[in-house]
Length: 216
Image (cartoon, rainbow, N blue to C red):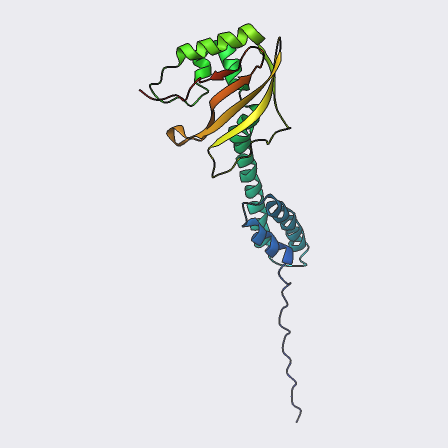
């Protein structure tokens, strides 16, 4: 009597999970760092390619990591654009927007660029300041940050930043110093001048406001 031999089918082997896919997902979860978001995009693309060729599994992980990397990069670009326009640019421009607004549109336009307590009346002081600036120097041509001094550095613990500038007008180039302050009207962050001083040893310094403004 012969005994029939029995055979068992080999267990199916699944391809290993793509390391790039896993790494892409992990890095994509770190939304606050530009480098990790870019790495998540690259590794996600590599992981998707590997799963297409059936050399590895984990396509879903790679797609998720790629999407998170793209979303993180978009959020970082949006935040960077907002921070530049809202914080960095006003610090670097210093008194230029306020002076141009006042010389072109009048004292009320300049006063709007300053943090003036509600009810404080500074129209006469603003008009006198602008008249003196225009009669002495003419119109503002350019405003450059004085790099020889410490530039203003954004800091979450500080609300005021002083910086020195060089102002070029039609008829003269003078030094100036301004104080920019973080304000939050209606819970929206913005930057406004607190005070501005122009240094003129020959004809006398000019300052606006001429004193610390107080409410009524």
